[in-house]
Length: 78
Picture: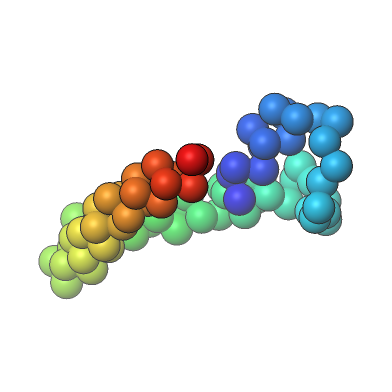
């Protein structure tokens, strides 16, 4: 959702194949809410050990996706 801001700034005159209702407020509120949820999960992980395990698993899954993303990005530009 946050990618919509630089994409629209990069090409302001480009034809946009989709519309975002309430732009720029709707995507900004979504990004803010998502950041709050992630921050809350991180804070709770330090107070409750069971939650900490979930954060570690989420970080590991995120890190496992990075090589796949790098591979996809390298091969989709050619």
